Amino acid sequence: MNGQMIYDDQHFLDHMCSQVPVQIYCGRRHSDIGFIEYYGKEFVQVNNIFYNRKQFTFVSRPGY
Image (cartoon, rainbow, N blue to C red; front, side):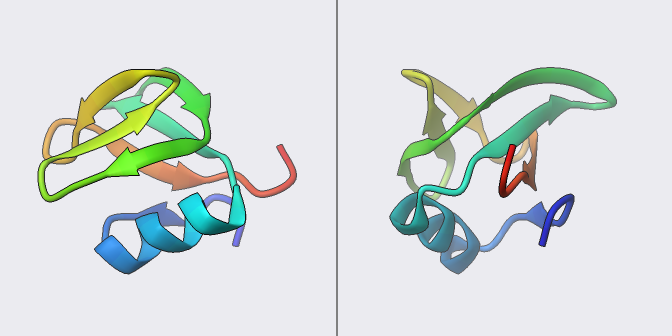
């Protein structure tokens, strides 16, 4: 769903496999938008940048 926060491993896997873009925020500030290239226990890679899962918020953006 558009605008849904994603935080669970299954959410990241679904978005990566389905090529659904995510928007990334640091607090209330927009940081990036793109497709998940890799995710792990601590980091998510989008646009060749690794984002810490504890520091950043990831939001689903289908159809963006």
